[in-house]
Length: 109
Image (cartoon, rainbow, N blue to C red; front, top):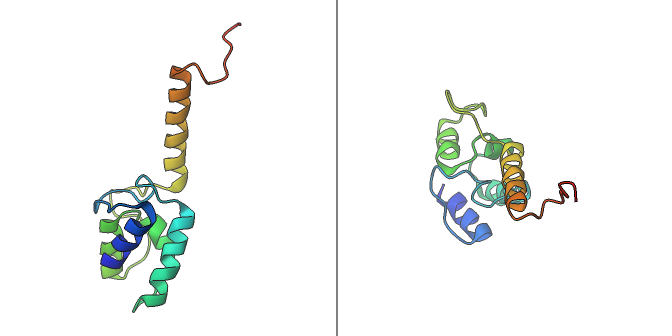
């Protein structure tokens, strides 16, 4: 997992915590696919790119790779998907624009 952590730091310019979601840390799906390609070239045991989306933090991904099992979400845990993270970010951006009066609403004007 050191190579993965180093790769992420190289992409976003900082290290991330083991439980920090890849997408909330600033990675996007393109970054993860590129990172997977680099890791796969050097990996002793290849793994599917979908694993990086199903286990979207260093701890979950490391545990899964160590166990060598399937890519289903961990028991009692829901993997945060790109769509869910993007939806939260979009909603936060709309709220911020609305608070500044920049949301395009005319409110009867």
